[in-house]
Length: 136
Image (cartoon, helix red, strand yellow):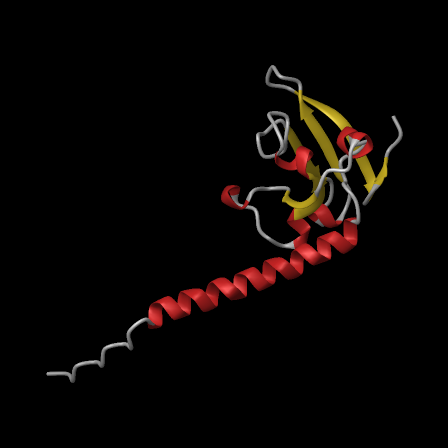
């Protein structure tokens, strides 16, 4: 008969989960800071919200984490609150979408789309490099 293994100390699983969560949050905070420095302003082309009033800027995931996206800088960009999650035409509500044009993801140029309301998409703008948009 093999000897019985000792019981783990009370609360060790909880402590390990908390440590893992803190490490994840620290990584995400570092990546978000990289995005804030890289973008400096809302990346949505000719953003109507930013011109009319100065909404809060947020780091948004291009591909949601629940849909297979990550919290790396290459999957995030700086958008104003209204473009990101403030209403039916926001990125979070699937009224807008962003598509990276290179393998660099959001670290490179992207195209920006808005829903036409009937199942199609209209191109709003396309970057040639971060923050520099192709002329119409």
